[in-house]
Image (cartoon, rainbow, N blue to C red; front, side, top):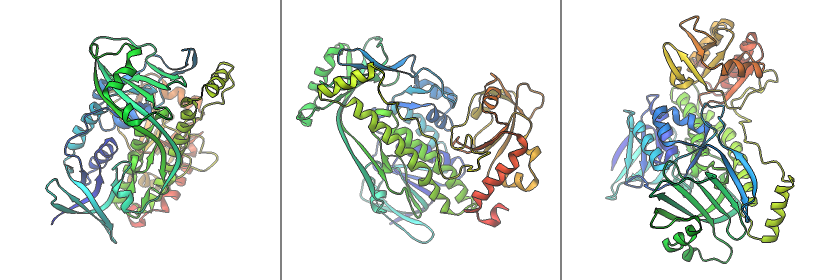
Length: 523
């Protein structure tokens, strides 16, 4: 039997694994990725992401390349009733705090092809297709993962840590006996993707039809593509519904025919809501669909998985560096699970509004919308636990997404992350944050990998980051803050109203990290 040694073994090679592998590989760690399929999945799946996820992708894919596949939404996501009377319009054209448009559409194979390139460019990342994980066991100082190739030949991987990014039927989860909670939400839809053969304009671009006769979603599938999601009604046969002939029949009212469009696929999906009760057991963690299943009504399934990768990446980096012990991974479940739970619950809430097949109940729902009596939709969650400031004077923005805007630095102009970099950031518009910190605090932050940033209106010093559009000045002023600490996954650890208070915020971070620190490494 062959043997290999890696720092981290990742099971599965979807977008969640690609992001995690690239982030860890870029830090110099040896990463082995094992995917049972011999070829990339060629058909669309996820089609929507938000500004936070665009920023995460920006950390591994060049911004100019991303813009080729992320289609901005020029108008609204509109809900209509059976009579096509608008019930709700959600503006998807605005920009998010992360420096990208709030919501964008894309074709997943195109995006994954870009992510595949950047992942394989990491010299110490090994991507192994046609290698199926068959079993694993955790030992004192490593995990043994056994994979087999298409010829049934087995290889034993000795990994310091294993991450299961292997989907809803996760072998890693099952092997680790990590239990799942099922919220008992099940809704069957036929998903149909087409490529128009001619130029077509669809208005509105993205539409939710709340028709009890057939709840239907119509959306862009990224540049040059369209998607329909048709709900399967009670009593209808899934087998008879899931045919090419039926797909064309359902598309006829939209003037979509074999003459003017190519059917890329039709696929039956049962939308479910589940999450793992714990996302970590010893040296094994779960991410993406292996850890949670989210109904698509918020467009957050893949997004949640990519957040998992970003959260895991900076924590595993610190652990592998020997800066902290792996009890830090307990904060992974603590942070990510409640955030994901709120998104799952919000998706169920929307699904229960959309998936109404009873005409009487649908009429009551429609009238509530028209009368303005619909309860407010759930707010998008922030992080609420884990490595966040809990002090009253510095927790104002803790757990919220940090600002990214256009800056100029050392002769280069662009989005902050492209120009300055990523990782722990200590930012102030008053002066360089180092000026109010003592030597011990600066050394602690530097060992965490932090960068100290003074952001200003003009280039009065070569080390100053210039706020090109005044967005940072406006943001700090409106929030009445003078300094922030930003985590590598772009969430604020905390903020302070006066720069002189930054010392206390750093001590707060140091105290929290002390719980996990290997003292010799960080002092």
